Image 1 (spheres, rainbow, N blue to C red):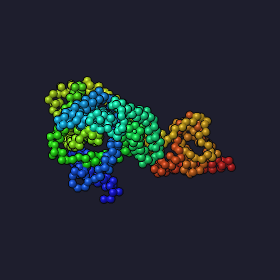
Image 2: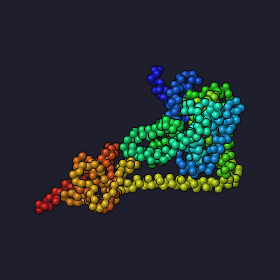
Image 3: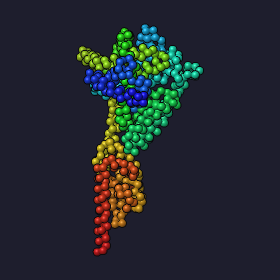
Image 4: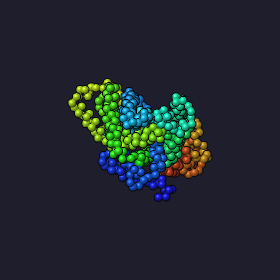
Length: 580
């Protein structure tokens, strides 16, 4: 294979292996993620056969991390998190602390340093977003109280891991590793180093929070108004990757943190759902490459060389984390069923575990065998997660049958409070969706010709429209001017003043299209006779939109032709009346 085709070979073979093994995993009722990891194992240097370029794969994996974190930020909902904060925040933090302590304990048994134990415990404490959401969706639990709590719990875990990614390089030397490149040659006390790190993160966060919501939504709207789907997708990716790279270059924070904030900022835009939909295919593709590259790092012989260590790590994830999750939920006096949902769904590890393990090895904190143990535990815990959730559901049913009074009564008060909070958020979301749908419906009701196009096109049209007001007596269009826009009357009325007389147009009518279609000049004066509100479509937007909707253009052209014929007939009639 020629060197210049190494990237193509790595990507192509990764996709082929991942597609085949992902399908096999799905047929075995396992998450496709398991197949992607095994694809990487088969392509890695520890198994016979084709060996991919691990250096290229690691760079592709970095892109996968950026897009994964961008997706997490894009779906981050502050309102959802605030609703479940009473259980998600203490639950996630408590689980991370206790699981990390158990990881440190296991590390001590194996003779590891404190730093290695901390990285190991942190890696085992955080669950996979992909796996959890997939499991909840398959069981229709994503919108239940238990599902919302599990997702909120996971968001807090993700935020804590983002902070860990920022602090680990600063604390590496203190924990027995070596400083990252960012801190080489900097002779500062530890507390100043940590303070500078946090100050940089705070500065970046402040810029993202205060400037981002003012710039990014405006930029997305500007790009969306071009009507170019590929340009909009390109803009979304440019914002995600640009903020991620800029944050690393200017503020010294990780790509992952920059990408996360890029997603959070973009989520504030009314176009966030479109940004998510357009970027999803690339997120999925590069996340596959990320998991494949992680599989390449895994040495399967670790299972034979250190079976007890693998079992210990797996027991911490499945048993330790499940028990901790359930205990925290019940101690906070929330329902037993909610505790079992959290226990089953969070008893696995994934994306952040791989990122933390890789960072730990690069900083000299975690030995290579520690990364192999984490990868082995991840693959096994993800594979066994459906079984763990099945056991949790079965246990939930048994408790409900055997002790119905305890099951129904325990945590009822907090459950009712949480249910009311979630209902408010659900109602608010439905109201926003209803208002958006109502606006589109009003557009169709006012202008029946738009019934020819679908809802996506109507959303695009709302972006293209420029509102304009006119007072009675104001000249809206002057005869002889060059046609530069088309007007739709939302309210009020205008008079079209021709040489042959005046024609009144009211809400639902439009004017100005004839000059746009013919390329000629305006043929009449148009005067507002009431307080008017127009939706104006500029020439460029008119041509672009009509080119993508030829049926609508045909309707407008037909109506313009009828108007022209009527004007001609009116002129002929008035001329004949004058002659008579």
